[in-house]
Amino acid sequence: MERYSAEISSALPSRSPYIHYNRERDLPLMLAIRNATFISHNQLWEHVHARGLETSRRSFNWRIARLTEAGVAEKLPPLLPYPGPVYTISRAGLACLEACGEGLVSLTSESRTLANPNQMQHYLELAEVRGAIRRAGVLREWSSDLEIRSINQSIDVPLAKDYDAIADVEWEAKSYRIAIEYERSLKSSDRYRDLVSAIASERQVQMILYLTSSVDLLYQLKAEFDRQDFPVALAPSHSFRLNPLAVRLYTTRKFEQKMSVPKRLGKIKQHRALLRVRAKLNPEIHGNRRRAHTAFRSHHDDQFVRCSPGGITLLESNGQIDRRNGIERR
Image 1 (cartoon, rainbow, N blue to C red):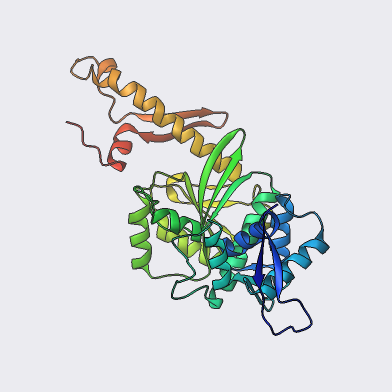
Image 2 (image 1 turned 60 degrees about the vertical axis):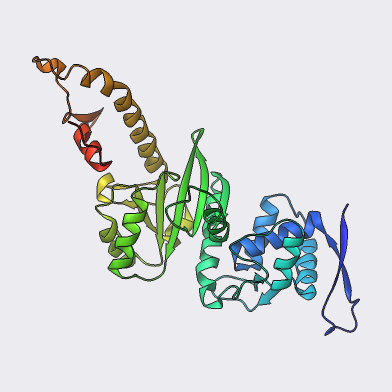
């Protein structure tokens, strides 16, 4: 097992000025603290325990105390209503991660500024959201905003924006990538217009989930996104954390109604299937568009329908799909 020594603060003369760094046990804790930006004691314990990195609460408490005493993580006072002290990574911690090959281009030990304490509640709430999705049994992978910014700065085809988080979830043997945004206050309409323009071309996530700090903010946000073609769903964050799979999602006008997360994912799967069918049928249909008989016309403005026990529901015409995707047919 690989071990290193690191000097700790001399403010504690009764203690040894060195600790033994355990890569297999200390590194995951430091990564969790850095990637979360801010994370409470309980949230950190639940994270490492769920991943099987720590099984003893007493051992966990001892280990996190060593890291804060060594100066690689900073311990901050609790922030209600999140129980326990809060941790954030220090410059020494970032330098240690870089030396271990775990650096990020979005935040380095030489960055001009580190985490802003005024954003502590924002990140603690996101940690609660991650825990709720994990407990629901559908979370496969979680990427924080630090990781997303680092990826966007490094790849040729970045995401449409630096989301607060991305959750890769699995439902009914299907995988989905959901971008998550947490809003505590309403931004200017110009900011949302820019955001709508950006996400219109998003192809790397299947849905954007906006979680809000209040119901009235939810309705204000819904109005900003109501004409957006890209799937956007909204829910109060507190309600979502209580039961992610049963909470009612408020969807934009494109998807019309309130529905739960499983139903929303089902809609996404159905929408994908319709586009695949359209891609297959269009060459056959348009190849016969010059014929006079209506059975062989282009069907450009025919609408897809879904038959169900409740009747027939109009979905979207070929022409609507073309116009939404900027396709001009002559």
